[in-house]
Amino acid sequence: MDTPAIRDRTILVTGGAGFIGSHLVDALTPQNEVRVLDDFTTGDRTHLSDDATVIEGDIRDPIALQRAARGVDLIFHHAALVSVAQSVDEPRQSNRTNLEASLLVLEQARQEDARVVVASSAAVYGHPDELPVSETAGIEPTSPYGVQKGALDRYTRLYEELYGLPTVALRYFNVYGPRQRGPYSGVISTFIEQARADKPITIEGDGQQSRDFVHVRDVVRANLRAATTDAVGEAYNIGTGTRTAIADLAETIRDATGSTSPVVHREPRVGDIRHSGADVSKASRELGFDARIGLESGIRSLVGASEPAGQDAGTVREPHSEPESHS
Ligand code: UD1
Image 1 (spheres, rainbow, N blue to C red):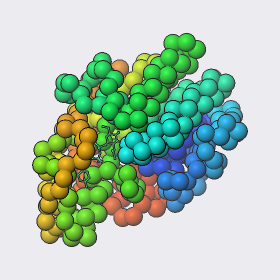
Image 2 (cartoon, protein in one colour; image 1 turned 90 degrees about the vertical axis):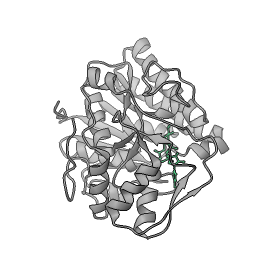
Image 3 (cartoon, helix red, strand yellow; image 1 turned 120 degrees about the vertical axis):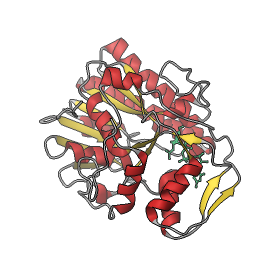
Image 4 (cartoon, protein in one colour; image 1 turned 120 degrees about the horizontal axis):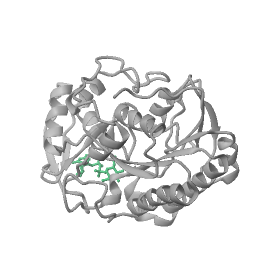
């Protein structure tokens, strides 16, 4: 199904300078009036389209949020403290940003009568009992981050039930793509960095643990569908439905980069989830969303991509090869 065109809307993207948010902004500008609320602690100005209006501020600040949200008809809420480890160390601090501030966003949306699409996470499932995990599985998070995203996810649904606000929660699996970097950036960007520097690729544990890796461009498409769907008041898994073992991922990245890095194993991560994979049938059926970018082509285009500049987009255009569709 084609991605819906969204135009002539007034839109707020919280965390719009971040990894996923900045790709979303690229897909929405210039055909909409797009505002970005970001405090730039992890967001990057150089990733932001010139067509977006930037409001520098913290989502915990009601005044900044009010200013950013005045007159909008659509909010994509991506601002968060994304480090699971940090949430374990400082649960109250992450709760203030990931949950309390998110409630401010939902309240502001109520004021403006704006649709809200929120970034939820596979972290809400903790260690899933069944694979692939579907949205009807228990919410059994194993970190404060997962508790916060789980509560936000529930609030999102409640705001539709109680106040008739059109809301959608997207439960992201392991998102990767251009502009992902920094200490919480995930295994794909870590392995690519190691491979490019011909340093050892470090697998934590035996490498047989698996994840569902979804490209950020597909995640953007899921957001656009969530912005127009009639199936509101719902949460959707956003993944590909395919799981990849970390050891296989290491080989794929070594091949794609032509690296001579050795693959080494170190201690498994404490509390690591063994397997994570999305049942994507609900998103496919109700949202009309299917991931299109296979992992190998996604990695190939990532490895071939030049450093992302303001308008490399990655969302609607890739600088090099266009990853193939497998839908
Ligand atoms: C991911 C999300 C997290 C979310 C969780 C939900 C990212 C970056 N994080 O965490 O926000 O809450 O899913 O389930 O997407 N690994 C190595 N070597 C490395 C780095 C990682 O072997 O150098 C392994 C890890 O031990 C893990 C796997 O790769 O088994 C994935 O790790 P990571 O990319 O950090 O993501 P998740 O822990 O799945």
